[in-house]
Amino acid sequence: MTNYRTFKTLLVQSGSTITSLENAWGVLPVNGVTGTITLEGQSNNTGSYTTISLAHLTSGQPFPCYVRNVSVTNGGSVYLLA
Image (cartoon, rainbow, N blue to C red; front, side, top):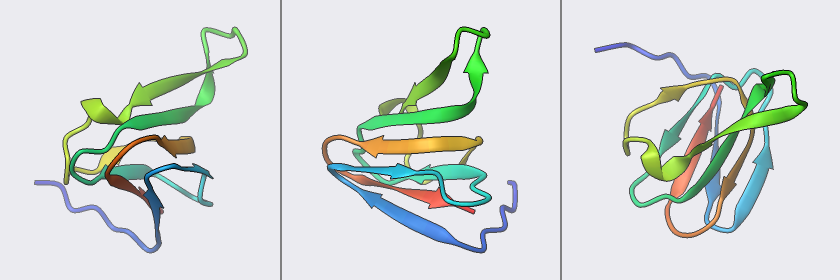
């Protein structure tokens, strides 16, 4: 088990898009969330950013990543961790 230290969280609810919280290091999905996470850093030097579907992440488990923005489209919520 890994011990994650969080000093600040931001709740992103259904229908919301949030630009990254300062010093964000990951996300914590809550049950039944759908949407995407856009990661910092460009993909293959094409100028586009890598995205991950929130539906593929395990609920209740922190997912460490450098977050550019989070978009929750339908149902559930996700915490942006910093």
